[in-house]
Image (tube, rainbow, N blue to C red; front, side):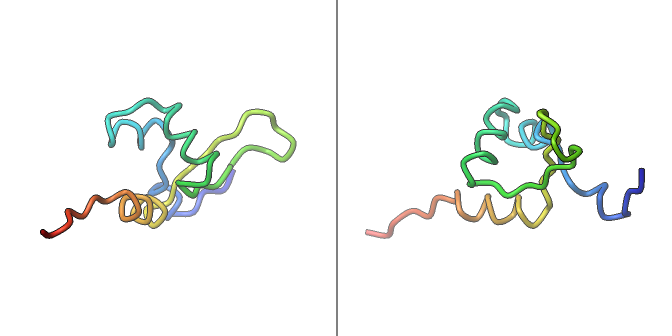
Length: 72
């Protein structure tokens, strides 16, 4: 299996969940509904996905979910 040096920076759903204090199933839900971009490293035709989230995708997700208070 070949792994690029940048691949180590990609996070598994469990790592994203740990970062945000939620369950991995929640992260997988975000991926499946398109809120969080990810790549699937599973073999083609596999029924079990192996999602990984890039640092850029995580940053985009955080930006989209940021709450900016309205000024009165």
